[in-house]
Image (tube, rainbow, N blue to C red; front, side, top):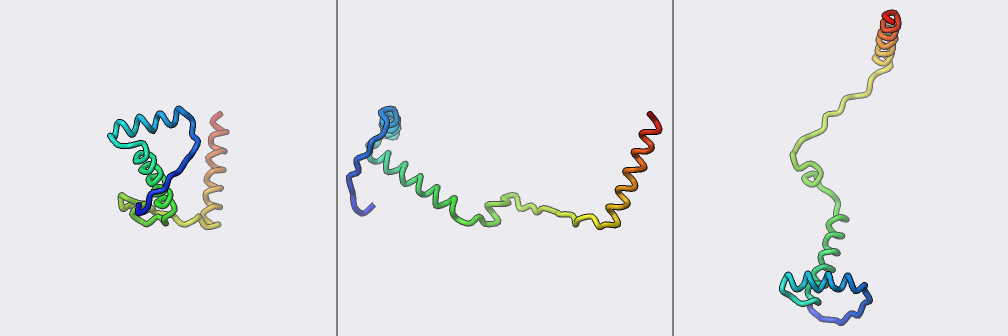
Length: 93
């Protein structure tokens, strides 16, 4: 922060007391607490907007194996197999 500016805002009393308590706990002024929290909120926003890289997505360095879709021939065999299983089950009842 190169320049300092005054900002007057209206906030609920409860929120002001929370900020005051946090500032007292951290042993700094109310202004420093508010500035720190505002700066953090903007830095989180910037981080979220950055494009995710491979490390962010897959921190265990694993890859996903995908299987190709079934062919029409394979689907037909699967349907035939299922139909025969249904017939077998209905005969046992």
